[in-house]
Structures are given as C-alpha cells and as structure tokens.
Length: 103
Image 1 (tube, rainbow, N blue to C red):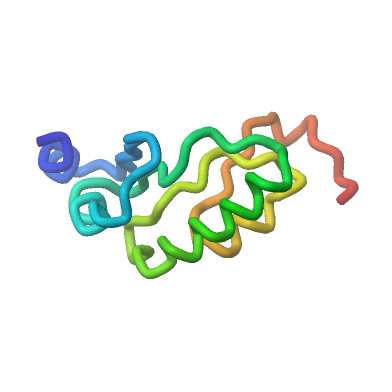
Image 2 (spheres, helix red, strand yellow; image 1 turned 90 degrees about the vertical axis):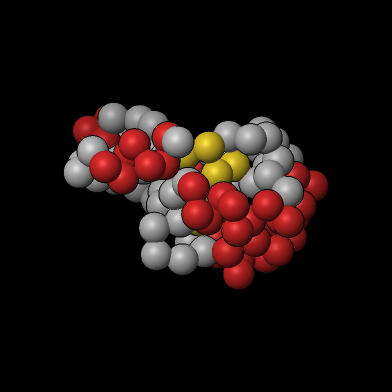
C-alpha cells in the first residue's frame, strides 16, 4: 500500500524498511515493495561484527538492482569500504563543512 502511494505521487522518494534482520527468503517481496531494507540488526564497531557483515553482504549480493538494495546499517566511518561491496549508497551523518580533508 505504501509502495503504490509513493509510486503515484510523482516525486523521487526512497522507501527504506527496517524489518530487523530481513530473511533472505523474503528478498523478492522486499525488492518489489521497497528501495532498501535492513538486512541486519545494529552494527557495532567490533571485528567479529564486521566479518559477519561481509558474509551477509555476500549472501544478499544477488538481490541488488536498479532502484533496490539491502542496507547493511550505518557503519563506523573506519569501515566504509564495506559499502563498495554491497552497492548501497554511502550516508554520512555529519556536516560536510566540518569534516576533515585528511583521509
């Protein structure tokens, strides 16, 4: 119902769902009704979580297409490289004018 309303409004709106860790067997439903969806619980800055995230991203990698992708949660900036693996856009929640130009 929400997807249909968004499609009819003639505005570029992204529907992002947070169903908790989405089950891979629901992928076709999510692709049809959302632009992005959380494929995991909250991600924390711990190595074991990072390794698990790479496994999840790999499992969901076949479910990325024009206008839809699984969301790997907000990742600590130090681990931003994982975004290049899962194809999702990078979201930075900081004022760009305040960010350092240093890597």
